[in-house]
Image (cartoon, rainbow, N blue to C red):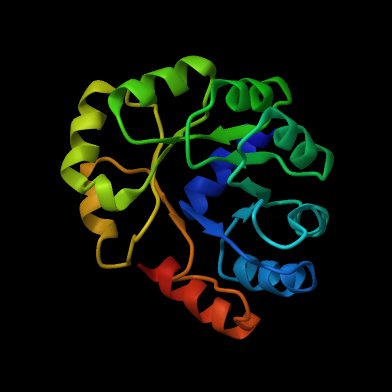
Length: 205
């Protein structure tokens, strides 16, 4: 399936992106299976994890109905590396036009990090598939509502950073389309069973 179509379908099922920062390649498949069983179809392995491309390759190969890719992607070269490993999702903490353009050229879904209206419009002009609102601690629901008022209704917004099940409702009411979930879902050394419990708790939220 086309990555953009896969992204849209995954969001319709469960609008949460799993951020597996620090995951080891040996843990990728059991963690990926736990997420899949809980309905998660969007998986991000930050590039500052151990051997991240190995984990991305394993996950992308094993879970064809999921959109798998990388986070903390900071250069066009890294975009190409992720694509070569089978990743079709690029997430960044910042907006870099070269990163977005390379992801678009390769047909990947790209979610650059933005914190202001200027960054948001620049990222969309470069071809971003959606916007990662980061860090969400600096972008409360009121700010999301203000951004939503000036952005096209089709633009997808994903607050990331410090999101809890208790705060999701206010963000959704303000216009957020989904969320990236990191340490409250997965931390290095966490068992697949614990991740499964966390994933189900988030899905319920």
